[in-house]
Length: 232
Image (cartoon, rainbow, N blue to C red):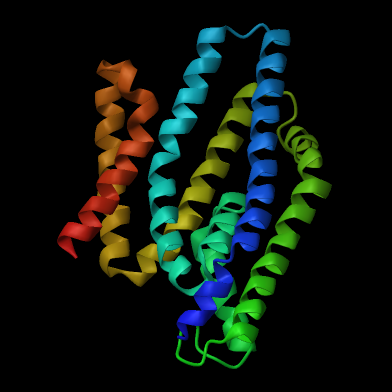
């Protein structure tokens, strides 16, 4: 790959453009936190409960963030730092963004990061990544507010059934996300198995030590990733 490509990809102007978009994302996050706290007060929720939920979210995000960061470092060596930072700050799905970048390169008729990966291929990768994210944003903007109505219709006013439904949905999501890694085998399978066992053990420990409950998922993820690196 021509080093001149990365010089273009890491131009100051590209960093400025990427920073503006990331700043918008940060602003949206702060607005969301403010609205969440405001709504919590209306619902009569304790401030302590809100802080605990916020802390749990932060800790839980550590595991996935490390994985995303590792992929971002790899992407930076091909499509540049600004776009890698921008895409993974907005979408956060490292496999999806990496796949989109590779598809863009293939559409340009070259190998992603190969010797023939030039400016046209770089631009195609950038555009593919951007267009790939449009569908997500449209679906989220047009249909997210209707999902709660669908959930209410399916579950009715039965709070117990709604709890079971929500729990089953979460199990389905985690099962779907892990299925690909299980099929791949190797280090991916090691991470899934060790992570799952760690989560079960940590959940039992958390019953006797409730203070660590909010950290269990993040810790289990880190243990799973570490095991994959050490044993495979």
